[in-house]
Image (tube, rainbow, N blue to C red; front, top):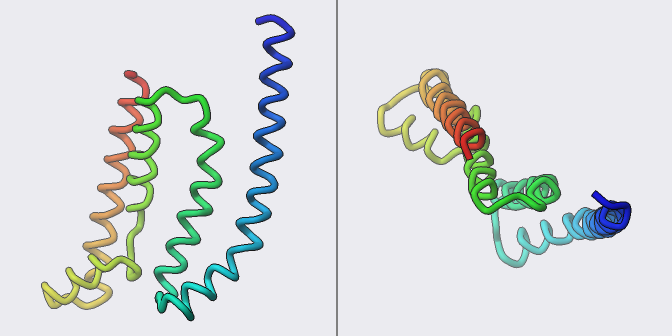
Length: 136
């Protein structure tokens, strides 16, 4: 690789880092105002607002990792994030309460079944995604 190519990559990286730094500042500064707006004007509940803020944070963390990946790896990255989102699912998950009420299980019994099942699905899914990542 020539020095000109290396310096071009470095300048681009510095520019992206600076953009991420300032966008993170805007996102963090805007977050409380967005939460208040969604709560008071749009009548969202706190759990939904927390989910939106978590997604925005995760996207901010993962976006630099996805830069320059081929399209197949971008799809696998999305699948890995989806598998990770299932890990240790608990009372914030609507499915938890659906299973609990449908089968008349106590909260403790639902933890023992639902959360373990979701964690296994997450780990198996991540394992398959990891294997596909190695193959492609």
